[in-house]
Image (cartoon, rainbow, N blue to C red; front, top):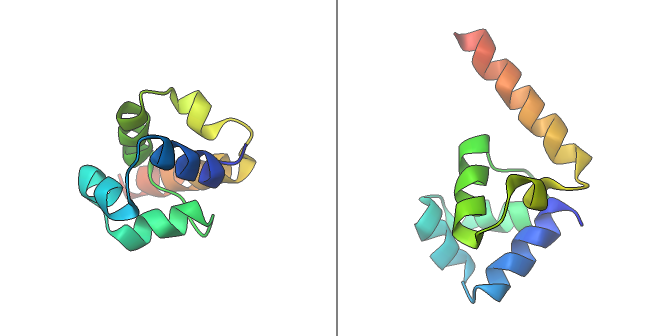
Length: 83
């Protein structure tokens, strides 16, 4: 299952609104919305926080979603170039 579908499913399982999840992660509600529709992806630190919030592994969150892997790879490369 793609990341955006897993995220929405887990959020609903935990009976959280987008706003409530955003507060837990210290991001905007629109960020959650964008992730849930697959417009963009959270950074690695936020992914780790999501995994902890939902008590799942990163592998569970990211399994089968190649686009998020590409996005994370680009994010890591950008950050290493800034060093």
